[in-house]
Length: 577
Figure (tube, rainbow, N blue to C red):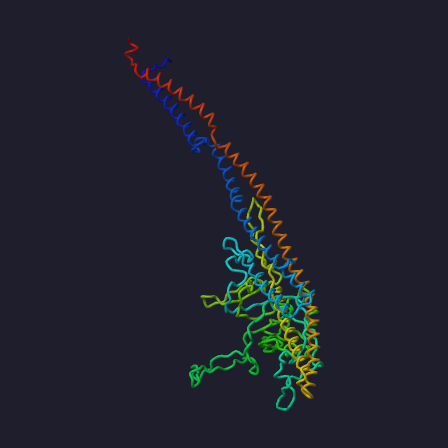
C-alpha cells in the first residue's frame, strides 16, 4: 500500500535530522572542551564502569604513594637521624662517651681531670635522653602509641608514680663496696677528736677498711621516695580532728590492723619473686606486713635506708638473710642466702620490684613507657594505670608497633620503640661512676692532707701515732677504691659496647625498612604511571580525531541547513503548479 508523503512530514524529518546533527556537534564540542570521551554514564556505560574501577585503583595507589609512603618515609628518616645522634653521643669519636671512658681507663689523670671528664659524661647522658623526645609533626617517635607523650620529662616536676619493675635473676648484679668507716669525714680539725669516754671518734684503722662483694637489683631510678612512718591526724572521742596549743594538727603513727606491734609505712616497697599464677605463692619481702587469709604473716622484712650509708651496705654483708632498700641510690641489696635463693630460680621466673618516686628531674625517662605504672589523674580523683597487661601476663609483648599501609595487603613498620635505644642502665652507670670519682677524690684529698700534717712536724706522740694509723687506713682505702674503679671501668666499657651495638642494631633495622620503603615507592610510582595511562586511554578524548569529526559535522550541518531551508520554503501549491 502506497504511503502519502506530505510537505509537513518532509519538513519535520528535515528538522529532526538537523537537530540530531546539532546534538552530535554539541557532543563533540563538549568532548573538545572537557578533553573527556563522556560527561555522563549514559554517554557510554562500558567506559563509565571501566573508569570507576580504574579511578578507584588509582586513588588507592595515590593514597599509598603520595601520602602513606611519604609520611612513613618522613618518620623513618627522622628516626634514622635521631639514631645517628645517639650513635654520635655513645660513639668512639673524640666527643663520644665510649671514647671518654677509654680515656679514663687508659690514661693517668689528675683527680681534677678525671672529675672534668666524668662531668662531661653526665652532660652527655642528658643529651642522650633528650634525643628520645624527637618528634615527627608533633608525634613523639619512640613512644609507641603514646605519641602525645614525650619519652623523657622536659621539665623537673613533683608527681607520685608507683612503679613495678619486672625482672629476672639475670638482672641481679654484683658490686664492690669498700668500707672506709669515718675516713671520708676526716679533716685537720677532727682527726684526734674523742667521745666522752675518751675513745677516738675517727678511729678507723687499716684493719677496719675492707672490700666486699654485694649482690643487688639496681632499680631504673635513684632518689626514690623515702620510706616514712605513715601518719594521720588524731581525733578525739567524737571523731573531731585534734590540734595542739599552737593550732598545729596532732599526728599519730598508723599501726597494722592485723598486728599492732607493726607500723605502716609509705610508700610500701616490695620485692617479690616466684610464681604469680596462684599455683605457688611468690616469696615476698615488704616494708609493710603482708598477711594471708588466716592472718598469718607471709612477707619477710625489708630494711630500708634513706641514704647510702656504710651501715646499709654492711647490713647485708653481716646478715645473709637481710634485704636492704636504699632510697637515694635506688638499690635493693641482698644477703648471701637471699641472693642464693634468687640465683636458683629458673631464668624465666619473674622478679618484681615495686616502689614509688615523686621527684623527677629534667630528662628522666617517663616510666609509663617501660613499666607497669600508676599515677594520679591530673584533674580527676582516680588513678591512671599504664601497661596493666604486664602484670597479667609477664610474657606479653609490650612493644607498641606502628605500621603504615603502603599497598594492597602490604604494611611497613615505621617506629622504633624506646627500649631498642634508650636504657635506664646507661644513665645509672654514669651516675654511679660520678659517685665513685667523688669518693676517690675525697679519700685521696684526705690522704694528701694527712701526709702533709705528718710531714709538717707539728704533731708528736699520740697525735702523730694517730695520724700514722689514719694514713695507713687511707692508703689502703685509696688502693681498694682505685682497684674498684679500674675494674668497674672495664665493665663500663663492655656495657657501653653493648649499648652502642644495641643502637646500631636499631639503626640497621630502621635503615633496612627505609630501603624497603624506597623499593616499594619505586614500584608504586610505576603503578601510578601505568594506571594514569590506562585512565587516560579510557577517558581522554583524541583531540586530532575530534577536530576532524567536528569539521566534518560542521560541513554536513551547513549543507543540511542550506537544503532544509529550501525545503521549508516550498508548499503543496508549489507541487500543484
